[in-house]
Image 1 (cartoon, rainbow, N blue to C red):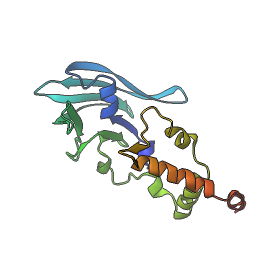
Image 2: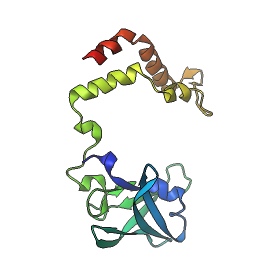
Image 3: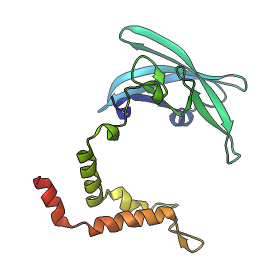
Image 4: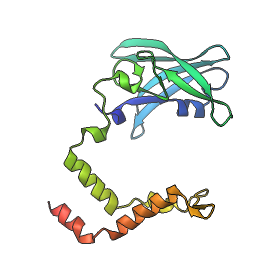
Length: 186
């Protein structure tokens, strides 16, 4: 099973939706495919100075599942606020995302059979993806250099981000067009 196919609950989204603000908040998280809801869970957060946890409640295979996932917070290295982490109910590890691949939402390493899609692909497929990625740069790569806060230079030197972007574009421009036709004929 791949990590990308699992349902997830992330700290980033919970923060965005206001679940990590002080107090008690409850609601429902849904997952959908093509606009059709495929599953949902009830979530309730309880954030105070002394207690930080979320309660997850859902039904799976006719069984009602209800449990708490504790949260810890550490001061931000920027000195602005706190950074929240889940404490996995199974492994005890801190993480920013919980995955649902069996009965519970757990840390990725709690599942021995869980892999990233890239890990499952054959070496030949990865090589072809790499060639196609170089040949057909997405519009996002070209548009990135025109984003609002994109810095091309800092103190008169090109930024690393700008250099990486330019290298990708140069590599794609050098790519011979007939190579793609030969690859597609394979």
